[in-house]
Length: 134
Image (cartoon, rainbow, N blue to C red; front, side, top):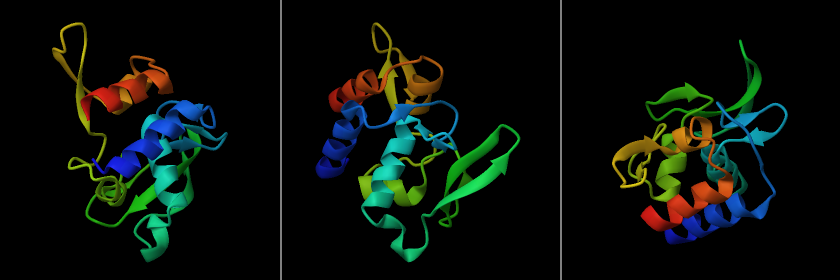
């Protein structure tokens, strides 16, 4: 992973500037999953300038959420890390990945969204996992 982007992401996750949410990169009420924080940093860095990443709104059955459009073969999703953001961050595995080992003996192979949504880890705890394993 790009060391500068990693440092930005860790700082953002630990800053208290983002309200943690679930099941979407960013919701209408301005909550973020851990991957949504990375997307927001990419938007702030100007990664959307060539049009492959935009911050837009989409009405879904769960309500209105923000999505990050990705035209590099992945399509549009409101809960997956876009290819453009993954490339900017130096992450080889886009989508809902990357995955890290988790558990008492590191036997589980889980995605960051699972740490955020299913295991209810705080942004600080997720930042510790990213710092230690990436």
